[in-house]
Image (tube, rainbow, N blue to C red; front, side, top):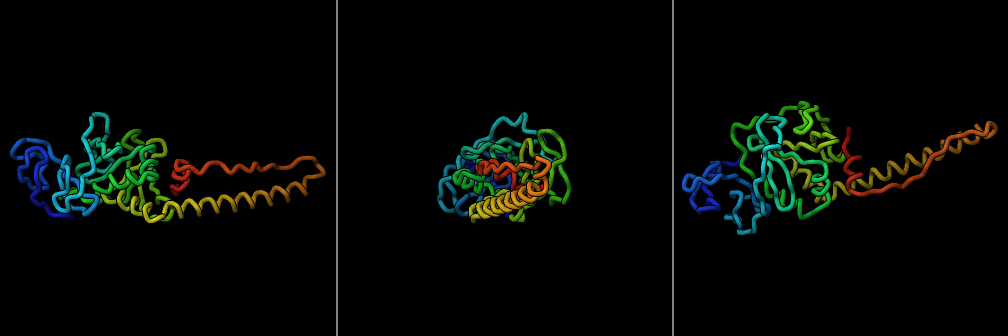
Length: 242
């Protein structure tokens, strides 16, 4: 866990410790995020990273009245817009909630991935509890979510509600983005396509065998060969190991 350091308030420029949620000089609400280039800490709203000078990802706080509760901490989630990505965050444990459509865009859009990586260096409050292996409720429907190894090969176990979205404990979303950037999702998609093609081939062989056996009766099975679509939405829905 990163230790607090002196940062500048993006509103008044005053020096404030990175673990403070309010500026001691102007009273502005503060939130610490990380630079996507060097992972150095800065306050949300800063235009440039004070460590390396990189342009900060544009982020803003949204109305959080309907954001729901953190599945882990049971505190109110905070709605954020990071670049063009709408996402919810728990300030206590550093977890993120993404709805299904947003997660599809994260998986397919490199600009969205770059924007979100800036939050991987966020300061985590020292009171944050280490996540335990347990089933947690969806923030939207309150039903217990499935635990799933993303893409069956990433090694990142996330909590999934098929109808509403995905919960990422602290550090999991950057790991998934790194997995995607290194070609992991593309490799998983190819493996899935090969597995489906093999299954279709097996079913065709079975259909031919049954047709020979049932020719006299005039009945027999029929397998419809449909290549289907391999858009990112279908890939994501298939790659969760449920």
